[in-house]
Length: 411
Image 1: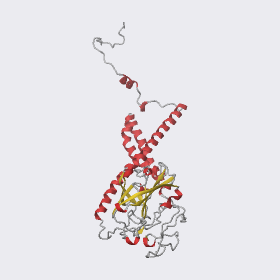
Image 2: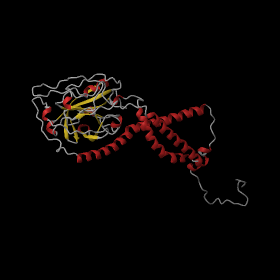
Image 3: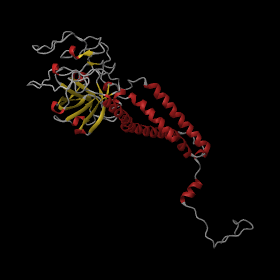
Image 4: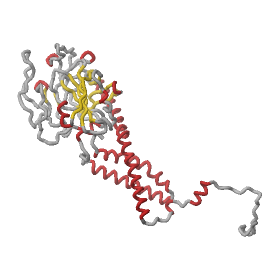
């Protein structure tokens, strides 16, 4: 029995009434000390080990988030760009009329399948700026449909979709049209390019027609030999090259897909009016764009054009097809020492990204510190996350976007 000392004076307890009970969670909350009211832990070895552990956990989470950005975040950017390119390309198709500038001519072929250049009309002069849509690409074998190809193969160009080498003919024109694309990040349009087999079809819709190519073979080359498969060596055939890094998630080698035009399934071919000069830093390893080498003999008794000059370091902005030698010199040093294909960029090559990374990093730090003090003022830890979560994720996206510029394109 109890002597009732715990009962206040003047009060009586009715034990017949059920007393309120508390749950385990309520008892835990009563015993729990709010985060910002807890005493500071002593700065001993346990504090050091705990700090290292928390740092490693945060670093690991940030790395996982960055991988997620690479695999999916970059694809979101490319998808948005593709939607914009679709609208631009369709507008161009509506305003482009080939009947007034190109006379449709069915090219005749000889016994070897060669298309004499003199029987093919010249394509209208049309200069595309970097990033402009030039074609719509479909490869049914690998499930690639309606991917819009842009002009140029700079890093900024390939973020929007596959890029057309400016110094090569357009698809549907005589010569070797070349297109490069990412295999992992930025929508990875060429991820399954290695699954193509001879005979598979590649369809390209341009402003002047639809052209179907047939895969002939696939080759894996070293980066140093990459440029040797791009230049045109025969202006009497319409060929296509698709290039990407190899193996997937690396850029150690280059995967090259060769294809030839299927005349029976394509619109009439054209001769390219001219070529544009390659972008600095996005050229072909060891190559210089073809230069004006003088007139080419295309008479009926000639066996083919002949080179009358050598490629020099100085190049012209445009080069007429009628003056392009049949074999573009390859493997020559252009003297700049910086000629490299798009996928040759290494770690931390884009030094222009440094101030952007530092700037966005400082913004992240500001959001983190501000959220901490907001929660401390409210004496509730969850207030930190409520205040800082959305701004942190938003800024983190742009932080990763610039950090990604330090990585090789194949990663």
